[in-house]
Length: 341
Ligand SMILES: [Mg+2]
Image (cartoon, rainbow, N blue to C red; front, side, top):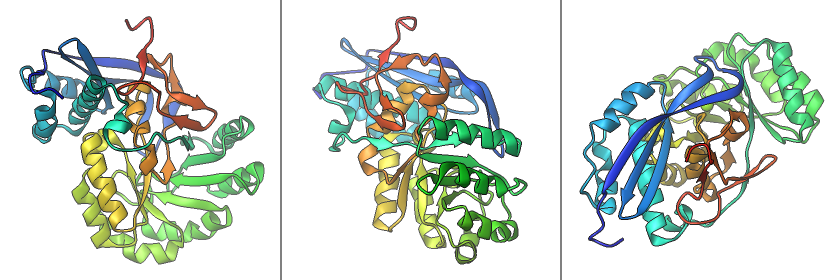
């Protein structure tokens, strides 16, 4: 990037999104929400980024307090750690990667030295009454989706997993995400039914802050444990390695503060033998596209937001059934729909 290039203009707003149906986990329920959107201009090139946060209004206030104009995009990328708020930082970081890649005329994955890769995403079944969850699973299976991530808690009647296995047959892959909803004793109690149902991984079973308990829990569970809410930085990956009993981490850009920190976390995790699940929040295709440029680094993929968002204001992701890949073209590669302008 030319040294004379500077950020000439910035704009921040909330992107109002709605889901096709209400989605519930152990600790939140979503139907309509707002994400943070960042636009940066250098010369006549724009870059855009997006990130989900439960505190979107606070995030917008953070963004509006930033003074990014006048900085060279490369310099700004190095200054990102000083932006408070991980989601705000992520939206700016993604916009900068989009901007720099567009200026250089290459896709973001190319800018990062990564190949363009496609992957099979799981689709999520939200918490509900067992009958509704089974119906939700049935619908995804009928549409040919090969991997389900089923949201559960310690209170969920897990015989529903056996019913889902029966419906999906031996080839269906089942992941379970507890979103911090278990106590170790309860998880040990249900470990038999989890294994019998052919569950492949169990995500974030315990509440955040109890990372020291996994080393003892892992042999009792007998299944791979992935951490999600617990991992918000590369340092958290180190903590997971030190604690032991952890098999993988869920990497979400908005949670980690953007592409740069996600890459640090991924490198550390790999070095210590942890697997990578590339995840997302309910962002539009703008935010999701940033993650698709990292697909070459993922062992498992949960980028199902485009299947849930109603009237996605961005298009261009290569999605066919459960197969997902980044758009072609420079930068993130997504296009704003006509209505967005
Ligand atoms: Mg999760």
